Image 1 (cartoon, rainbow, N blue to C red):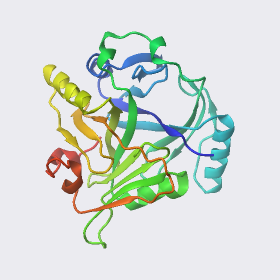
Image 2 (image 1 turned 90 degrees about the horizontal axis):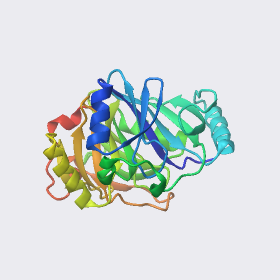
Image 3 (image 1 turned 90 degrees about the vertical axis):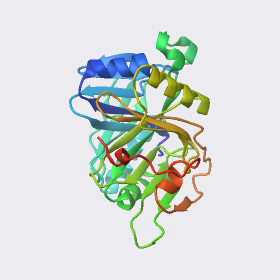
Length: 298
């Protein structure tokens, strides 16, 4: 009865056509399905979608984590319900490529979906051809939120939903609140990160994985060639050790292109503790603080 992996996110966009051009023509994602007003996009490594776009507003519609089969889904639904977590009824075939799912809402008002995929993963050589896919990301990697109370939000995931701790940034003064947490369900260093914010509980970014720091640089070149200025990067984070760049989509949602994310196979190992301000861990190459805009979310 364990969550296996971060599966997908559905985000809201102001202009669906502009968002589709950006994610497909620029980032290289492939349109896989439409269901009502939502368009489902994949990185091309299989026929499963990684990102959904829902018109209307900005920010997160929902995030999803997978389990192995329907029996695991039902057991986890029962476990969460017994812990007093309000869960929706299990729904069959709720989105393209899904066998079943249920949802709950976190204390910070994010919609968290638990899903079972329909069918096995296919292989890259059988996927649809897209000329832009030559530079597409490998996969969706993680999601990050701004939170008024990092500790409260983190403890819900670790104590109630079964996430494991990876890294934790604490202030020098132990009496001050937590600054940044990194949590996971599998070996990926973080499936969710939660950073202290002052603008409410919002989406900070969705991250896509590429194959090495040279690919991150190549994305920076491609973005610049098409007139999109990166918000931060290229650099390397302390927690997770991953290289990064950040850019905003046409609606203002922040996207990270990342590589070299650490793997942590021992879920019983305690978190690595970092101390200081965000500037101490944001970019280990410079220790420069992130831009002021990094305090914003959608």
